Length: 336
Ligand code: TRP
Image (tube, rainbow, N blue to C red; front, side, top):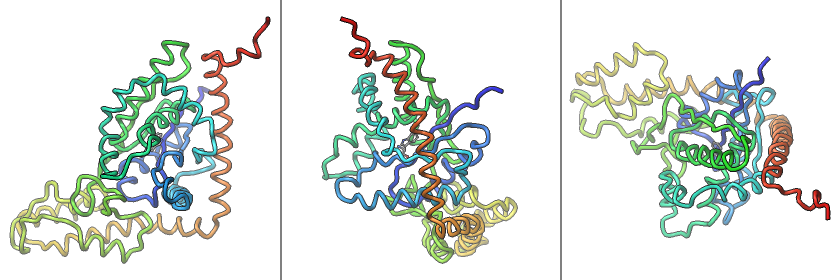
């Protein structure tokens, strides 16, 4: 039997995961685990909180692991990996940074946008170079496929470039990985901003209790031109309907709401209540599994330890190839 192709993908531990993570990535990951050999990485070298709050990073690692278990990622099948416990990542990052032109990093639109979020605070050097580490993450297990949200595609382009250059100069060590974007490339925030994100404070979290979901949905941005339920409303681009499309499996209900909204025969309150109900039905089993694991944190620890251990062995095998390519054993080999 042919060996399964490999997936590596990851998330930075900045806090609990939200609906945007789910629709853009997690949902895909759950489906792919049966067909691929998967590494799910918690990229804890790559968070900007280090300078001020390490405890927050540690706590977020547990949150991410719990969310992964809650949505159905399976640590018996796939490896849950803590990045910083595999220091080979740091070494590979440094070697690979010789194969990445500075201009490609400077032009990277995702990195640019994230650096702008720092505002007047200074950007740490490690933040500027984190995409190189992401390249190392992907190349370390010699992954073929990288399922991610749309914003991550520029980083996968960097990865392909580095793999090509390395392979050309030495020998075929790294597959050129492909990106794969989920069903919803980018989910809008509850405030109507283009992206759901923790830093924009416009997210619904997978672990939000029903009452919080209800309240967030009640406050959602909707058609601002509509003043009363009898005004014809806009469905296209309306976040409430975008969420209905993504999370409400009752297509007839959604079609009916849209039709009545356009005609001006349904109020925003009803549309939102139905959305809250759909979201809570979707989240109930996730919250339930999360609570079960949260009561047994030893299992979560074991999953992280076992996955990291497996991945470290694979990392060492890759580093042996890299050391060979770079002729790093020259002292051992020296015959005077
Ligand atoms: N940079 C990614 C994000 O912000 C997280 C990440 C780190 C990642 N390493 C990765 C994603 C490797 C895919 C592959 O979401």
